[in-house]
Image (tube, rainbow, N blue to C red):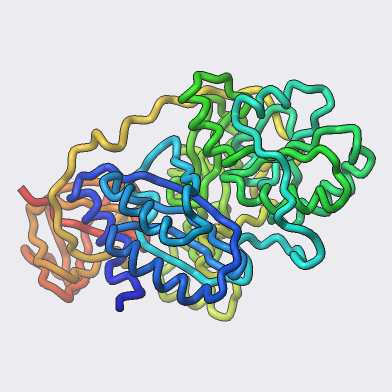
Length: 452
């Protein structure tokens, strides 16, 4: 019984591109008593792996929390795998506003103590006594009520790029931090105000609404299906969006646009921007907002110190990370004094700029290619890249593609290649080859030979 991924993320991305089929990005959650989370996890992996379903899923004795990518043609079969369980019959699947075939490239199902780290003792209150669910139209209407207080139960890096107008946006890094802060801040409004809350897909509010009812708040409401479902209903019903900006999401997209308003700034230069990135330094990986100009100048780094590190030989980078606890944390979200234009807490409600419409990623021409190997080093001053040839022969005159999450996809034709310090016409499997590359490459980059 296969309970692990047999393909790397890069191999999976190639297979998805070659298949050329529509994929859907979905999220869902359900609170339920699960007696054996490990067996539940194993059964789901087997069923979903057969359907080419990918994603990041957490299961616990209290339920399931899932963000996934599924071939559109397998959607009904996927629903059937959920319907096997009584607590997921008729479950709402939140469908992304902006689909991306590469939103997830692996299937990961982890058993956790909780499906959301809320820091609460569920035995001390009735977790099923939740707030009133509101659909998009009802949510818009209650926001216009002067007796409404609306709270964003997401974190600072999420609300900074997009939020509902007039919302309280706590300056926190985790959901559990926001609960006592909001409880204290609204102590005097337990009976006279509508406490209205929202989050990305609804799961955080499901627990938060029950917690605040337990704390004595009389009128508690929550946005059904979160911002994701709200955006979907806006399009279906032609409603006005009271959400401005971009909705941060926890997959490779790092966000999907709800309105064209850009309300945040590049953390390095202050230019209007709402594109998140992770620092290129593997010993940092700080999540921050970076414009294209700073991305190029800083080589995707958050600071001069990290820029210096990424230009060191790989062996020296590994040595610097030895013994440290930061590691490869893609969603590390701590703040940094190096980010001069980072904003949290009270946030603007007027646009700093208007986003340009992105090209449809499905219209890109599929390139036939074969994986050759991976990047080993980039010599900045000489503009020379070093690669390990792993899968096929490389020759002068070959047209190649260098691809990576930060580098993007860059094509060039090889005029000259060097192996072991000598110019040669051909490099074989196992060789370390160097050649001129007129752009910065990263250690995560792959090199492909373009066919035809």
